Structures are given as structure tokens and as C-alpha cells.
Image 1 (cartoon, rainbow, N blue to C red):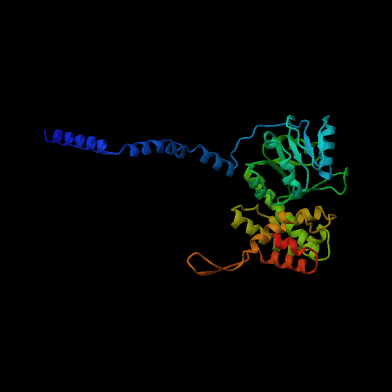
Image 2 (cartoon, rainbow, N blue to C red; image 1 turned 180 degrees about the horizontal axis):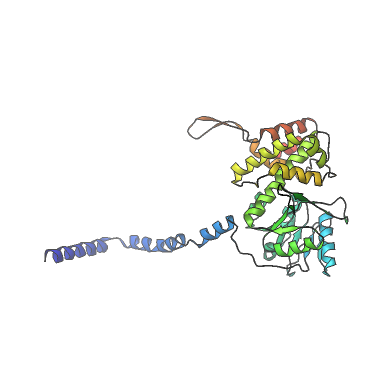
Length: 349
């Protein structure tokens, strides 16, 4: 009986409390319910982790008539490979809008500096079909345009002239296995790999994580080898590997360390030997510091180097921020002093 009395008293108190609660408070509580339901949905988080881990499923695709933006060396190579398969591609020049009704992939065979303009000329419904082929760090560009996991290829090959025969950048690892370094990931990865295979270029499909590692490795290569080669008078890639292997190897390791601790991406082991082997394969390629490519290569790393120095945190405590790529910065400033790279490019980084 005492238990029943206590329960009854509790119910009366709860009812009384509810009756005394202001109506606005009850409405406020109900208005929070949809928010709680949205926040408890773990699907978005799971999709993001699947993307980071390279678990996102991609439907297989085959080579087909495509849109090619850019008629330079890479664009002409892709068009010629498609022609061998009997395809008639749509080739667009600078400033031409991408057709919205074309069902196939859109290969952006333009320098990184022209990608912003090319994306702006692409209809919203076709942006999922874009395939990025440019060297350099493109992730900030993807973020600016809201591109989530776009199709991207890392091309390890050489073309000396428009219409020439491409040289595949195949290297031999320590086990004696020879393999191509080109990788592609994304919606049209199968179609692109198939087209490259038509021309004898080995391009493998990869998951997002490994494809990103390959793309960042190419960033390290083009940044270090071009900077060291230019600093020594404009050497070829092969000469850099043969005459200044220790210097360029140290810079590659420094930039790879930056990638690991800034982007949380560890590059594949054997970096020094693999990049030197590739440079020897491409021994005839000249090195240069291209102003258009600078923001996507050396400029990307130098942007972080400019943060070095004494800083004062919100608590008023002075802290010393180190330059995480001091060797790269040293070479870059020397190149500036010798007129190899414009001061305005460094200031704008």
C-alpha cells in the first residue's frame, strides 16, 4: 500500500509539473525533435569514412565517345587513342562551354591554371563527369568548387610534342617487377584506363586512398625535380637524378614528410629509388619553374613556409613556428634571387 501511495504521489507531482509548465517550453522541446533525429543519422558519417578509406563503390565503365577540353599534347593524345577505337570525340578549345547533353566523360586536358575557368564553363549536371588530368595539388581547387571525390588521374608519362608517341613511365621495383605508375580513381576510371591502354600506356584503377597517395607523390616529384634542376642551370630530369641525387632525394623526403604530417597521408615506401628511376626513364625531359603551375606546386608548400616565425597565441604567449620545408624554401629563395621565379609569385603564395 505504501508503494502504491508513493507511485500515486509521484504521478500527481509529475502531472502538476506538466500543468505548470509554460506552453512555449513544450513547443520548444517539440521543435528540437527533428534536429535530434538528423544528428542521430550516422549514414553521412559512414559515407565520409568510406570515402576516406577508399571503400566507395564505383560502377565499372568502358571507353566511349567523350568530351576533351584542350587540344594540346595530352588532349590530342586522348583524341587519337579514341579514334583508334572508332570514337568521334568532342574536342573543345579555351573558352568553349561543355555541352550538357553529352553522356560520356569530360577529360580536362588543360594546365592546372586553367581549371577554374573550365569548371565554370561546365554545366552543373555535368560536373560529376569531369576527369582531372593536371599535375599539382588540386585539392584546394576541388574544395572551392564543392567537388566531392571527383575523378582524377595521375599521369606518369612524357610527350615531347603534340601528336608524338607517348613514353610510359614504367619503373622496376626491388623485386624486379616492372610496372607503370599512372593511376586513376573515380566515376570514369574504367573508361580512362581502357583508353590509355589503347595507346600502350599502363594506367591502373585504384581506390581513393591509394590514388591520392600517387597524386601527392607526383606533386613531390614535379616540385623537387623541377626546382633542383632549375637551380642548377636548367638540367634534364635524368641529369638531376644522376648528378644531384642526394640533394633532390633530401628534398623529396622533406616534402613527403610535410604531406604526411599536414595532410595525414603517408606515401608509398621506396620513394627515393622510385622517383629517381622514373627521372632516369624520362631523362630527356627538361626542368623548369612554370609560373602558371607554381601555385599548385612549389607555391603550395611555400604558402605554409610563410607561416614560420614568432606568433602570439590568444593567451598572449609567444610561440615559435618552424618552417616545415626549410630545404625547399632555401632553394626557392635562391631561385628568386637569381630571377628564376618572380617575387610576385612568392608574395601571392
